[in-house]
Image 1 (tube, rainbow, N blue to C red):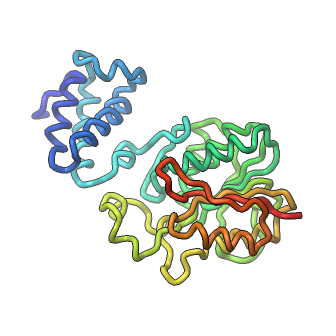
Image 2 (tube, one colour):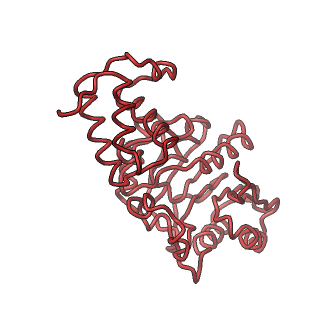
Image 3 (cartoon, rainbow, N blue to C red):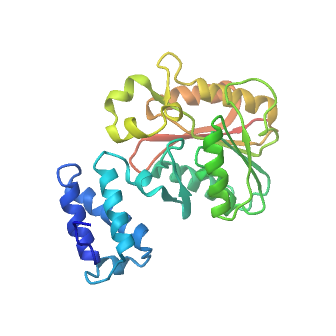
Length: 288
């Protein structure tokens, strides 16, 4: 290997040089910490700043490989093949979205509003399984099911459930298809469905457009609420009064989704802003 990487300091110097001009300096610093911790297995934050901490030749080769992927614009989570979500280790591939902080806020809201819940929880469009896994970890006495239209996503979601030692039942399911669905009887329904309009593509970073699955991100401009309408119609037919629903939403459609929830007779329909002040979560309760 042409480059000599033997210590934590060497990693910082190498990655700073390799990624200069591709990412801003503060992002390079953040990426370097993530990569160093993942590759070296160092969990104590202070050790990431000890310049003389040694690494192995194999770890050095892995740093070079990851930097090569990062230079193409590949997100660091895909280059590493995993991320952390609400304290859970989540493996990723090209069939699964990278979990976002606002989705962690969605999970946090559900956990804090439903302490001690022991019923059935359904995560519709689970992707990597991150929401279902975080909820299963925090509601150990509940029954958690998760669905997705992608068989490849379901495979990695099952693997993630095993990694995190939680029990979840996974089902292939199309949110938009009629018929019987495995989420029937759920006391809590949660979904982060596709909600970005095709017209918004031009506003998005190339890292997202080039690497994340478009079917999990985008909807037609002509019917941007198609998934929300289908989920609420399903809730009408398959859940009991008092059931709750939590949805991650496009900030541009807060009022429209509230109107839709009220049409379906949900009480307490509310839109919650995320940490950045964007309308990102809609919630409501099925009326008796």
